[in-house]
Length: 508
Image 1 (tube, rainbow, N blue to C red):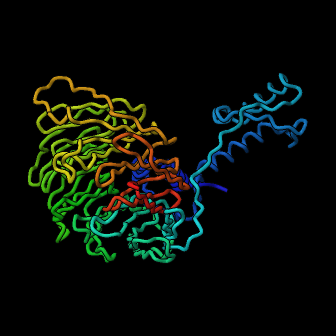
Image 2 (cartoon, rainbow, N blue to C red):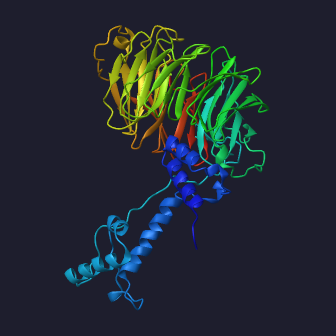
C-alpha cells in the first residue's frame, strides 16, 4: 500500500479543521491546491491522521521488539515513548529495546506509552434528519454531512442559516414550539452543481462564512472556492459573485443593504453592488490573507490580516483612510463598536486592542490572556445601540479557555497624542470551559453572553455578575453560537455535523 502527497495533504487539512485551526486549514488547503484533487471528504473518518500516526508508531514499536526470526523475546513488548519512536530508525530502536531488557531482565514494561487521541464524536443523534426534536429544551437539527462552521439567525424571522464543510448551506425555518417532530423545514443551498442530495460534499466549496442583510430578505454566503453567493430567504440562488482568487473568510452586508463586503486569502477585500453583483471596488493593501472585515458605516470599513496590519478603507478612495500597526502576530478578528467610533482587534500575539480614527496608536491594550485570542464581540449597549443607557463592554475569547470582559469607558475618550497606549485591567474573567473558546455572542439586550468551545459546551453568562447561568453539553467541538432576535433561543454549530437549538428563558 502507498499514499500519495495529495492524500497526505488532505489528512493534514482535515486534522487542522478538526482541531479548530480554521484559518490555518484554509490557508494550507489553498496553498496545497486540495480543491484540485478527487478525494471525497466523506470517505475520510474523523481523526484519520492521528489514527494513522498512532498505528504507524505501534508498528514501529512492534518492529523494534522483534528478533530477526520474527519472534519476540519472552513474548513481551517493551513500550516506547512516542518521542523515541519519532526520533529514531528501526535499528536504533532495537538497540534501545535491547538496552532496556539488559537493565530490566524481568521484562517489565515502560510506564510511558504512545500518545492517544480522541477525535470529536461523529455519531449522530437519533432524531429524524432535517427535523427538530426537543429534549429538555434542546432540538438537534440534522442534515449536514460534515462540520458546521457558521450559523446566523435571520434578523426578522424565526429562521436560521448554517454553512458546512459538506459544500452546502441550509436555511432552517423553525416554529415557536420545537417539541413537535418534523416541524422544522430545511432548504438546501448547494455550492457545488455536481453534489448529490445528502452527499459528503467537495472540500473546495466549504461554506466558510455567511450573513443576512438587515431586512432578512437576502442571505450571502462565502465559500472556499472563492465565490460569494446571494440567496433569497427561501433558498433560491440569485447571484454568484466571482472575482476573488482564493477562499473567502469573511462576508458582511452594510446596514443599508446596498453593498456586500468580502475578504479573502488572496489578500484582497471587495465591495460588491448588491443589486447587480458587480464589483464596486477591490482593495489590495494587505500582503497576506485577509482574515476579517467589518463595516464602520455604509461606505467605510476595516480589514485585518495575517500580515499583522489593520486597514480602514472608504469606497471611492484609492488609499487607506488609516493603517493601524501594533500587533506582533496575525490579527484574527476586528469589530466596530455600535457607534462606529472604536475598532476592536484581537490577535495571536495574545492581546486585544482598541483603535480610534483620531489616533495613530491603539487607545487601549488588553494583555491578560495567556494564549491566542481567536474572537471578540462588543455588547449591543452604549451609544449607537438599542440599549444606550447600559455601559459598553468588550468580550474576548482565547485558546486559554477563558473569556474576559473589558470596560471601555476610558478607551472611548480616544487620545489625540502619541503617548504609550494604556494597558487596562479586565472587569472579570469567565472560567468554565476546558478547551479553546471559538465563539461569543451577546443576547440582544446585552444582559447575557453565550460562549462556545471545543470542549462541546455552550455556556451562558450573566454579564453584570459574571455568573454562569446555563450550560448545554453537546457532542463535538463548537464553531459558532448565535442568539435569535428575541434573545430566548441559541443556536450552536458542532464539528459532528449537527446544530443544537437551545431554548433559554433566562428571565424566569
